[in-house]
Amino acid sequence: MSTNDQPASSNPLHSAVIRLAGRSQDGIQSIGGFLALLAGSTAREVMTYMTIPSTISGGASIFQVHLGSGEVLHPGDEADTLIAFYQESYDNHLHSLRDGGICFYDSDQVTDIIEERGIVNIGVPFTSATIEAIGGSAKDRGKNIFVLGMLCAVYHLDRDKLADIVARKFGKKSDDILRSAMLAFDSGYAWPVHDIKRMHTVMASGESNGKKRICADGNTMIALGLIAGGVRYGAAYPITPSTTIMEIMRVELPNYGGMFLQCEDELAAVCMAIGMGYSGHLPVTSSSGPGISLKQEGIGYACMAEIPLIVVNVQRGGPSTGLPTSVEQSDLMQAIYGSHGDAPRVVLAPRNVKDCFYVAYEACQLARKYSTPVIILSDQAIATRIEAFTEPNLEKYWTEPELDLSERGEDFKPYPLEELTRHAPPGSRSTAGKYPVVTGLEHDEWGHPSGNPINHEKMTAKRRQKLLDIAEQLPEPPFFGDESGELLLVGWGSTYGPIKEATLRLRKAGYKVGSLHLRHIHPLRSGLDEIFKRYTHILVPEMNDQGAYGFGQLTTMLRAKTCNPAIQSLCKMQGLTFRIREITDAAEAMLAAK
Image 1 (cartoon, rainbow, N blue to C red):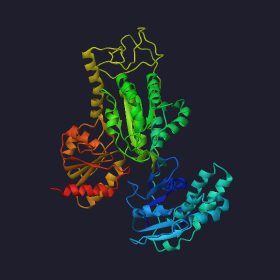
Image 2 (image 1 turned 45 degrees about the vertical axis):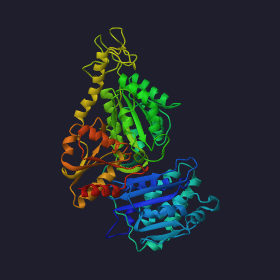
Image 3 (image 1 turned 45 degrees about the horizontal axis):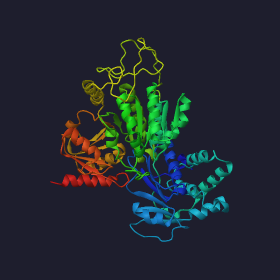
Image 4 (image 1 turned 60 degrees about the horizontal axis):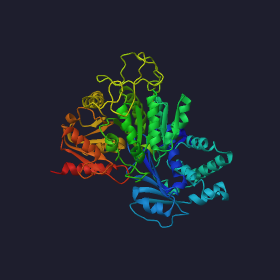
C-alpha cells in the first residue's frame, strides 16, 4: 500500500508511541530504526528512545518510537502500542501502556495474559509465523522484520517506502538474506489482526516544507558538524556511548585530506589531539565520563598553552563504570572545573539531535577564534536516539580549513596580554630567527617559561578574559511561553523536549509559565539574572544528584551566578530521561506551596 492508497479517515492519528520490548539480540533496535527512517522520508516527525544492557552477553532491552505529524518533543510518557516478545517483556512493560492501549504479544512465548485498564491484548505467533514464512532452518531469526510488516499494516504506513528501506538495508548482504527479510516483512504485513479493525490506527501524513529531510542520531550529527566546522584531525579511544563519533570520523576524515587515530588509551588520545592543535590544525578528541577524567590533565595543558581543541563528552551514568548504557547529566562540573588550577574552557550542550550539528559547528568557531578548548556535553539519550529534521545547509555551514604558515615578524608574540592568542605552527618562518615556545609551564608573551608572580596574575586574567568576552557576545537562549509570570523552567541538554512539552501543558492548565534552554553552559550568558527576576519560581530539571547542598549542578551554577534563592532543583537519578508528568507534577507542587 503506497501513501496514496491509505484508507481515508475523518480523524487520523497525529501521534503514536510504539514500545518494542524484548532482548537485545532480537533486533528490536532495527525495527525502531526502520520506522524512524520511514518517518524522515514521509515528512513525519520522530523521536526514539532505547535501553540496552551493559553486559556483552545481552539481555532485556526496549526501543520506543514516537511518530507524529507535528512537532515531536519527547519519546512518549506512555505507549499507545506495546510489542512484547517474551513473557518478561509483557510483565515488565504492560504498565507503560496507556489505558485502552494495544498490546501485541508473541503467543508462542507469552501465555499469562493480564486483563486491565481496557488494554486490548492481541496474540500473534511472531516466532512460528516467521519460521513458516522463511523456512524451518531460520529458527526465529527475522521475527523483528515480521513485526515491522505487521506494524506497517496496523498504522497504515507507506508499505512501498518501508519495504524499499528494508531492501536497501539487507540488499547489501546477500540475495538470500534479502529474500528472507522480504518474506518475513510481507508475512507480517498480511497477518490478519482482525481485533483492531474497530480501533482507530490510521496515521496522519506530515507536512513537508519542501526541503530535504534526513534521519540521524546525535553522535552522527556531532561528527558531521565537526567536519563542516573544519575539523580534519582527531584521536580517541573507544567507550560507550561515544564510540560511533570516532568510527564515523575515522571513515570520513580521509575523504577530506585528514585522519582520525584510535589510540591505546585516553591519555594518548588527548595528547595526540593537542599535538595536532599545536601543528596548526583544529583537532577533536571524544569520550564519555570515565575517559574525560583521564583526559583532564591534557585538557589543562591545552588551557594553559591556549591550544584550540574540541572535546566531546557523551555523558552516561556514573561514577566509575556506573551505568554505561544509561543517561545522566552529571559531568557538568567535571567539564567546567575538572582540571587542576584555574583552567578556563568553553562548555556547550546540544538540546536535540538536530542541534548536535550546529553546536559542533559553533564549537569549532569558538575554539579557533579564542584559541581555547571547547567541550561539547552531549548525553546517551541524544547520542543514541533517532530524529527526523531538515538537512543542514552546508553552503552556509561549511569551513574549509587553511594551515597558516605565513612568516611571523619580529614583533610577533603568541601570547600578547591585550590580544587573543595566535600560534605559529611549526614550519612557519620567523623574521627574528627566534621561534616562540608552547609549554604547559606559565609563560610570558613569547611563550617562554616564567615564574614571575605578576606575569602569572596577568596571564591568568588574560585567559579568564576570553570567557568574559564570550559571555557578552552570546545570543539569547531559546525561550518559550510567558515572558513573565509564576514559573520559569530552565534546562540544558536533552531535557529540552520534556521541558517544552511540560510548559505547553502547564500553560494549557492556566498557569503563567515560560521555559528557557541553555546551550552555552560555560560561560553563562550575561543578563540571565534580569530574566529570572520576572518569575516567582524557577525550576531546573536536570539528570544529576542534588548532592550535599540540595541542588543539581546547573542549579548550583545559576544560584552562584544570579544570587537568586527562587531557583530550585528537580533532580532525577534513574538512568532515564524525564517524563513530562514528572516535571508538571513538580511544577504544580511548587506553585501550590505557600
